Length: 235
Image (cartoon, rainbow, N blue to C red; front, side, top):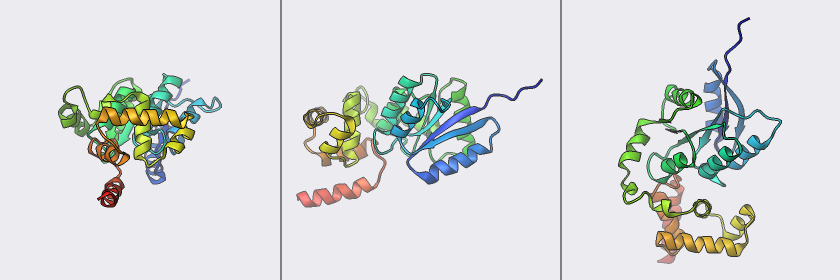
């Protein structure tokens, strides 16, 4: 008796509903793929993996830059809980710290959001077979990134926890919010914040956001407007 080939099960992780819905509809047309879940952020992705009543996805198609813990930390935590899952990272950012950090966190692929559907499908199938895939545009920046000299991006100086807190600070989170979110004391968060500033050679959250935009840690153009407002207030 003939048996149907096993489908590639996929969990979609993106904070934009329209993006998730669009990708899900395109994947639904593929006979060898099945979307088994759609979630808004890294926290929900981890919850999905930890829920034993749900199937563990073969592929996690994850936005690299989301509110909360973000794609980098979510990738690490998902792979700690489910080593058999494989991460395909996606982002509109092609240079700076995001692609390299996602790959270091354990993602097997990094694709940009402006690629054609055929290339995304190729990335998913390649990673499902256990191989790596990086879109050419990202590969070029990884090889020629002006921030990658002398040991890597400036943000590579940060520890795993420091990078997580730096991202939350650039998202506009206050120390009290970060403290509650990460279940750390405010004093501990302030200590991390001080070490982040010291390692990056800066003195304020505004300077941190400027560096985050410059080095691709954030792809939100709104940050530029917020920085300008803060600078005008300070002047």
